[in-house]
Length: 454
Image (cartoon, rainbow, N blue to C red):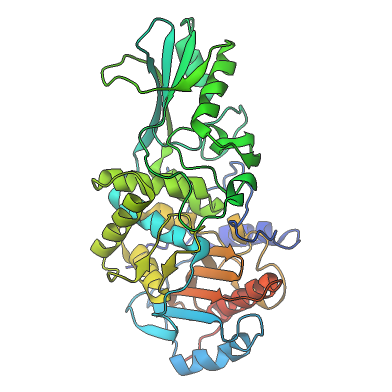
């Protein structure tokens, strides 16, 4: 059964009014991820796991009439003929209730998913991990007097800031407060929880300097950014975290790498938001660092090494357990940044269907984390005008953008009340035509939302 619940007409109208106020086009980032600001905590604008944000898509009591393939094809013909996507678009549209494929176009052909791969990461994380679990960053006593070890637990949201944000990150200053009058003469950093290469297969080296992602590390502050919230990423997030701790302590202590003893006394600790909140945040903001860290946590939970290879194997195993066919997902990272990633569109709609009919208490954060068209996250500035407007507030979907790739995958409620899962991936988009391709995908989703298509 569907996990979608009704919000009531007044709440839905209020949300749509907020979403449609203002204008502007989406920011374009090629060979990176879909940028989105951190949304401050407002009752109707931010996901809330306790209580969770109520999804906007309400199930029809009778399930609604099933669209026909022929009618869908006729209604979508103008979109499929758009020069930005024609001959390049892979499509899978599936009825969530029955699992019936309503529209298939190259749906078993492996395509480059870009950031829609984060849907896979989200479902794997919520399936393999306790959604209420938190990641712990510790300061423990070192081997010598005055020596402390900052030990990473995989939380890339650990913050040096003092402002409010949702979800509320762990704060470096809280570690400092707990350390109190502890004499510190040397800071060691232990980021040994994660292993292997720090840059993913198929990643461009400029991803770090352009700020798209930090070198993967189990220890970082401010997601390894040179400036909180912006700027390029540092080359060594763990050392930068140690230096930030020394600065916050007001000491000029040397900062070097080290390992914490297994029985070292814990001097201070802070915890991340819950895994469920991290998954929501990853999807809403399309956060690459959270995606890579969550996948490594899945690897650890499944007895795999916390590396790119181990994470990919663990995620694939979890999805196979959920019924996604073996070999239909071939991901080498968790964020979708790699140009070596491949996913069959039919596999992604299978993941979305599993998400929609699965255990809401466990998988709910992935549903509430999917951006709402015209309202939040990476869809906040789309679906506001023109032919895509009918889908505003009705589509929940994850975007994906790389050079030559525009993707959109999610869930939509049709005019007749039927819940559909869809994946649209335009692979091979001409240089300079990204915005046109995005507009075509938005129109496609709008047709699904507004067409009874019987």
